[in-house]
Length: 244
Ligand code: NAP
Image 1: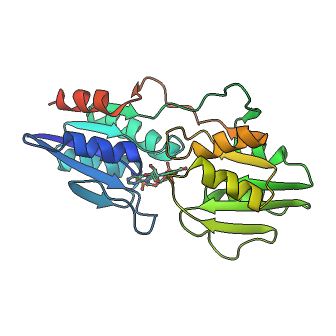
Image 2: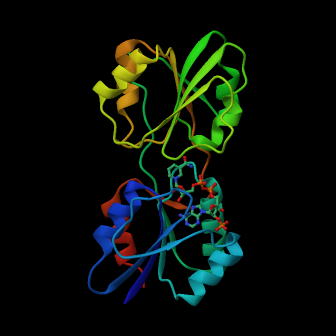
């Protein structure tokens, strides 16, 4: 029996769990446990942090894990760093599964920035901002005179919601038609997003292109050096099946 731990919280992680589950493979998916009512993968699921690299290394050893796949979100950099360190210490093979980032195309008007803070610096009043960088980033953008924010997130941000912020609770996938209507309804004039990649949330980029909205795109944090990286679920599944 091969034992695979998937660090999840993404659509790719759920797809990988579904593809790997079957005779001869025991899959455990790990979720951070911060989203209420998360979409659950098939198979065994555990929730909550491990307690840094030490905790994860202990878990890998105790559960005799043969292969570790980090299929977390491209911006979950602490988890990825912890996985790299725990894998190094225990010798458990680690593969990173990341959906490819988005690419600018004809008609797009993007500014790439290295951080949320750099994105916030680019917002000049007056602006009506479509903010899709996650509820925990709200404080970075709030409180700028003349900058109004429509902040869309899956779960509500910690109260109190700052002045000049309207929170919209929703979870993808989204349609281009719906995103276009939202941009028009709220008279939004700039989109701020992280380079999450993937099909579930690209509709906003298409709608922004069609309506001539500039996009401020926050780049992914760099991966720790030396990690194996793949961009698709079936390659990750084949890799995990081959470990043991
Ligand atoms: P993060 O900042 O890299 O992680 C912070 C801590 O949360 C980690 O050190 C770890 O705690 C715990 N953690 C994170 N992912 C975990 C997992 N899959 N299983 C167990 N513990 C986990 O991560 P984040 O950006 O907060 O993301 C948290 C989760 O949400 C991830 O599973 C990610 O895939 C998902 N997600 C993130 C985003 C995003 O924009 N960041 C978007 C969609 C989904 P310990 O150190 O105690 O082990």
